[in-house]
Amino acid sequence: GPMAAELSVQELIGPHANGCYGCGPYNEKGLKLKSYWIDEERNPFLGSCRATFIPDPSMNGGHPNVTYGGILACIVDCHSMNTAMAYLYRKEGLSIGDKSIPPKWCVTKSLKLEYKLPTPVAAIKLTARVTGTRRNRRIVFVETLVESVDSKGKAVLTVKGHAIAVSISGSNKMNPHPKSHTQKQQQPHSKL
Image 1 (tube, rainbow, N blue to C red):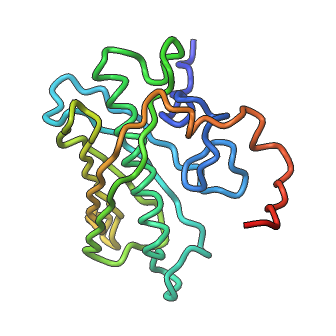
Image 2: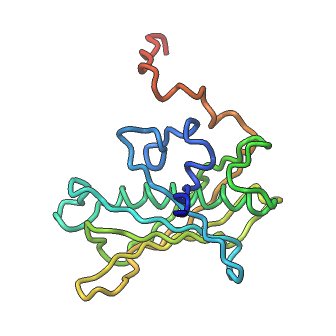
């Protein structure tokens, strides 16, 4: 029969827990980036993920055919963190999002982007690689390449990102009530 649709890291880790603007499956106004783990036998890196993103024409940086750099930072950030989280599961020999353990979450400690060329408002390919870890894998280093196709149909590197992820595994800080994304926005408290 037909192969089951491949699930993204975001879907595997638990969509109800992720209302992220950049990659949360249930954020209706969000970008819904999907990262896919690359299971390569001879991967020279510790692990990697791929993603494709198609910016909306409104996501331009002033020039109608140049993607706004902040949107690129957003998707590089999300893709980097999801790659780090997927790596933490795989490194323990677990399937991504394994429900027998508390969710493995990462937050961004640092994000550095080098814009090499203007990125067209067209399909973007992201490849993130775990390049190292520190402090017993509490810190995960991720390099993300953003590529676009130029007018000659050649893949061109437009952005190089370096992120540092901090594992907050087992923490409920990132795991709100499952229905939190459907509840009405609470009014802010008047007393600050």
